[in-house]
Length: 304
Image 1 (tube, rainbow, N blue to C red):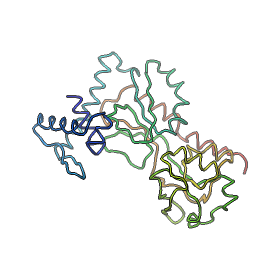
Image 2 (cartoon, helix red, strand yellow):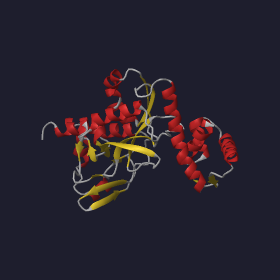
Image 3 (cartoon, helix red, strand yellow):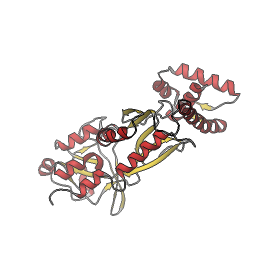
Image 4 (cartoon, rainbow, N blue to C red):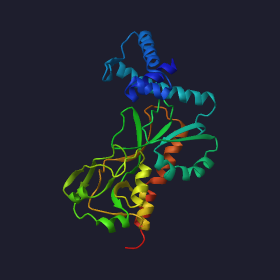
């Protein structure tokens, strides 16, 4: 039963049978069969399915919210039976964006694990939004403007994004003076990251265009900017060292990325949160608040 519940939750969060099947290594036909079995057992239709979209019925939405709590309670019960209640211990499975995890989580895990030696840490890095229930993650780091209502979110830090380019690029092409000048420059962005939504003195501005190099990797975009191939919109957590050292320079400093994007630690919404999750969220909050280290580094920027 627990597996069918997790499957149902994964379908809702993935948005389709095929996407849920890929995450759970099941064929769409098997996913459909198990959902039909669950609906038959409950005596209620949970989903409206068409060739284009999938939505929950009213009963299905209520059941989904209860399933999220049931799965979280089951994990807490397993911890209690194993004698781990109240003490951070056991597996802690965490998902984080690739660059952020490499730069700002992995280097800090030693003191956390030394303080909690009974935790078995699993850190998975991916630039795709992970399915917390389907993939059985305990915590995920999300960099986003908004989060699913079924998740509890702890804001860790703001996500400041600035326009920047290498000195060599600016020497060759000139620094843009006005936002409209970007139309004549090479832009750098990963797949689906253009157009840019920028906030400036007159409010929101949309900058459209194509990336000078097509790539699905945000890390590659940073390296392309450092190499002098164009102007990029980068988070300060990603390029603070380069900005501080002068490897990259800000352009059009009156403009920045939309300020409604934050860095969050999220976990399934439930009345029972494991001690390991609580300890890890508290640890990250202590690392990044009140001013995250990458922005503190910019405040100590060398030179003029």
